[in-house]
Amino acid sequence: MMGTRSSINNKVCVITGANSGIGKETTKGLAALGAKLVMVTRDKTKGESVRDELVKHTGNPNIVLMQCDLSSMLQVKHLSEELASEYDHIDVLVNNAGAVFAKRMTTPEGLECSFAVNYLAPMYLTHLVLPLLLVGAPSRVINLTSGLYKQGMVRFDDLQSSIRYDSMKTYSNAKLMVLLWTYHLAKLLKDSEVSVNAVQPGFAATNLGRNSGSFVQEVMFGAVRFMQTTASKAAETSIYLASSPDVEGVTGMCFAKKKPVKTSLASYDEEKQRNLYKISLEILKIEPEFVERDANSS
Ligand SMILES: NC(=O)c1ccc[n+]([C@@H]2O[C@H](COP(=O)([O-])OP(=O)(O)OC[C@H]3O[C@@H](n4cnc5c(N)ncnc54)[C@H](OP(=O)(O)O)[C@@H]3O)[C@@H](O)[C@H]2O)c1
Image (cartoon, rainbow, N blue to C red; front, side):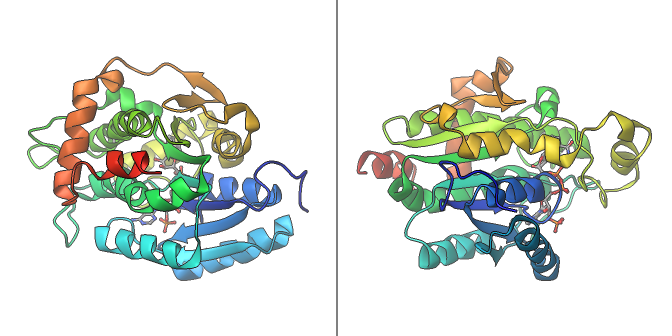
């Protein structure tokens, strides 16, 4: 059943990793509030079955599917083109998809998979759809990080963990990168009405780590399962940031349990933020001034 109408009613919300766990619950919550949802999933069959379930459950027929494997920057580019051909604006972008990789793997584009899916893809997608977000302004970008970012480090001499790889460490590094980028982008967009915030959803029972290899799987699906919250509870902060009038204009913050939280000193390091952004643009072969110029011309 459709819930109470809110300021999100009829707004275009794009959610990555929308077929599972926190992303599925975020989609469900926003659909119940009457939003127009674009579920980004990499598996069409899985995506279609979840979409049908959510349409039935919420009574909201405005849920469409777009397919993208976020480890491929080419597919991310195609996704942005598909979004631009279907929509003249975006109100909310939730960069929710994430994954843990037991072993170091690289994509056909030569990117380390955890770096690509957890950090570079959301950064690139947001960059590519910025013109749509600017048209949709006041619009909102919501980036999923993790409390594990505290164990992360950004090693500029080994950004993609080719010297040393540890699945959880590399995941934590990427989640720190998400925070550094969130804070930096919020500053770049300060004169626009596009807000950019991060979410720590909490430790939740989802599919995260399911096929990632023995140790991570043991942790996520073993003895600690009882300590985890539900995906639905973990989605509350994303839903709040996407829909609540309370956070209109709030930008450059990290939220947990619907409240702003302070993050580590490392995450606020402006030099690191700038360096990471610059190197990311270089990897993606993007002109450095694009974001500033675009935001200021809006
Ligand atoms: N669960 C937790 O305790 C926890 C804690 C802190 C942060 N987080 C973060 O919360 C977010 C949601 O994770 P979750 O816990 O809900 O895990 P989940 O159930 O595994 O959902 C992750 C979603 O991301 C998608 N995804 C993964 N790799 C992808 C790729 N290459 N291309 C496109 N989509 C891809 C998955 O698609 P498939 O179904 O096709 O794999 C799935 O829809 C992630 O960013 C995660 O890092 C989770």
